[in-house]
Length: 272
DNA sequence: ATGTCCACCTGCTGGC
DNA sequence: TGCCAGCAGGTGGACA
Image (cartoon, rainbow, N blue to C red; front, side):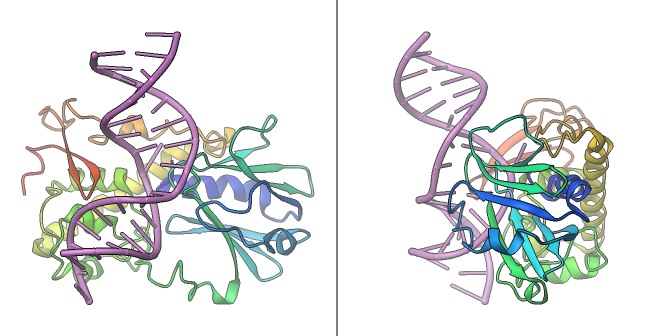
C-alpha cells in the first residue's frame, strides 16, 4: 500500500479520529515489527493528548502534548484499520482513544515499524537525518533535483527510489512519473538535461498530487484507513500493466527488472 | 564513496 | 485439488 500518497491519505484518516483526543490504551501484541518497538511506547502514549498528525516521507507522525512523536512506517503491507470489526490476523498494535475509537496497525509482512522520539530531536533522528526534500514541498525543484542527480552514475529509476534524493517516492510512482515525463528508466541520472529535469519535477508533483486527490476523494468513508488499495490504481498508466497499451501511444507496456525491482515503461514514449 | 544485491516476512496467483 | 515458484507498494546493511 504505502508510498507517499497512501501514507498521506492514511495520516489524514488518522488525524480525523486522533487529533484532540487522549490516548486511552495502547496494546502491543508483539514486541517487534521490522525492529523492536520501544518497550516504553505504550506508557509514553497512554494518557497523552494528540496535538496533530502529519507525515514526513513515508513516515506517519503522531504528535502528543507530552513532546513525544510516534513514528509509524507501513512497510510493504502495513495498513491502519479504523474501528475494526473484531481482531484480524496480523493486527500487531491497537490504539484506543478516550472517545472509544480504535486503530489497529495490521502488517502481515512486518516490514513496517513503530518508534517514538522526542519532538525536539526529530530532525536529527537517524530515520530522518538523511532524507531528501519532500517532493510536494518548496525544497524540491529543478535546481535541487539537478544538484542531487549531478554526477550520479545510476539509472534515473534507481536514483529516484533513493530517499536521500527525494523523500517519499516508491516503485509505483517512480514508474508513473518517468512515463509522464517521457524519460527512459535506464537513463543515467547524471546525464539528464535541465529541461528534462524540469519536466520530471513537474511530473513527480503531478502524479503524487493526483494520487492524493483521488485518495482523499473517498476518505470520508475511511476506505484508505481501512486498508483497501484500489483507488489510484485505476489511473496507473504503466505500473502493473505489462503488455497493455500505453495510454499515450498504444504501444504495449514493457516490464524490466532494475536493481531487483520491476520497472514498467513505454518503449516509445520513454526513449531516452 | 557509490552503486547493487539481498535479507527481512507473509500472502496471493498462476502454472503444472 | 494441491504444490511450488515467482512476485509484491520498503529499507538498510553487506558487499564489490
